[in-house]
Image (tube, rainbow over all chains, first blue to last red; front, side):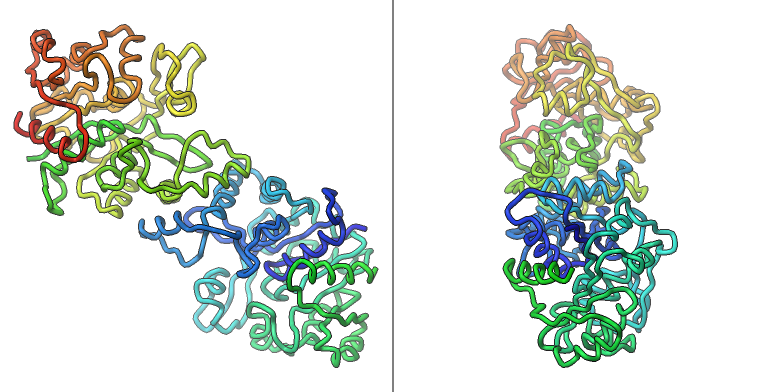
Length: 311
Length: 311
């Protein structure tokens, strides 16, 4: 079975890990899982090209991610960042010494003209990742966040200002010209396409905004499922609940289901939201109720196996 | 008194440190010492712009240099380099985590269009260096080394192959178009211009090859002195002796004096070479015989003070 996951950072990375374990336990088999990852959060720091969501997915699939924080590598040191600060650089974005190697290699290869998808494939392979990790586009696509404080760059909003600003709207800069990276549209013809429990606006919308992706998902021949990132009216991590509210949506799995109603066949909601199942079904969606909180690898694999049985 | 030092890496950095101590002991006074530094050894590694001689001078003047090795920073760690190696990068050139911050900042600023001299001034200031450190040119100038194994890039010859190849000749790529960085020609009008005990071919020649530098040194109004890097027929560090020999020069302070006879007024040779003093004088040079081996800061400052008394 071929599975494609549409993913942002932490939640997407964890489900990607689960699917990878469920599809090829203990083997080196590749090609069964494709993860199409958001790049709207990419940022240039100290002249280096940083792709936080892509890296979170790659690091997690490589088993090297810092599970507690949800981003970056385990057992990091920060000697370079300290030195950058001493040289007068703004260091609000934490970059570990080992993580920096990723950005240095990515930047050098991009500057040589390699597309981001090829660079990502190289980095993932070097780290022993067997799934295919595809940035949704090789073109520039930047998520800008409109707030009472003005329009902010994504990482300015998310990391520097700790997503405390009210989100009034989102602008996907470059979306009109961004083409899907090679393999992205093909990947949407998989037996199962899963929309990860990522932020619908910050992580999933930038994927759908790339030319042809929304249409390909709408017309996908396989089964399409979405996992709600909202559980009991709250997000496991990040500002999904606050953004649903500020943009006028219901802050619940039902509110998420309404966003995805035209795009997926199955909505996966948490057992704590079982009372919403009938209303979600009323949107014309198949509903699967389960424990959607992924703790360690075992919980991820369990959720992934349940998703595979939906097909 | 204004002093200008023409310098390569280690030997130049040590004498620069001594002059800095001698000219402004304990003060924050700047502008008395200008160090014009070789850039022919600059190299791009992992997409980062590395200027080894410039950094050795800056780190040494900042009191942060690794004195034992003669290059890089003290108390370094190598987490990023290890990660770069794991990502498949060639890591024959050792880059510490803190050192990398320098290269990251330099690269970002150069890419934004800042000239190397401005970037160097920023880095030196951030590290608390009070002397002015000037790369000899903001233009590209690459020292290539002709050997029996073919023409090698400088760091390929020097670091990767550990300067074991016989040097048949040198080619200064870009020298014909390289213009002196702002301030370089003015600096040669100082009261004292010192040619550091650096490698005459690998460090000093690339300085003189930049348009106008040799002429400005020849016409310099102040006193010009050179310190021999050869002591008792050997170099303190590096392949100066081997290169003098392979290029057909006498491997001695006299051989060095012949190279500089038309450029300086005073030749400073080590007391171990006192027997050569008459022959050096025979070239029309004033000779100063002293202990030229600079150990710690005290030895550097002593030699520097002797140089100041020459004026």
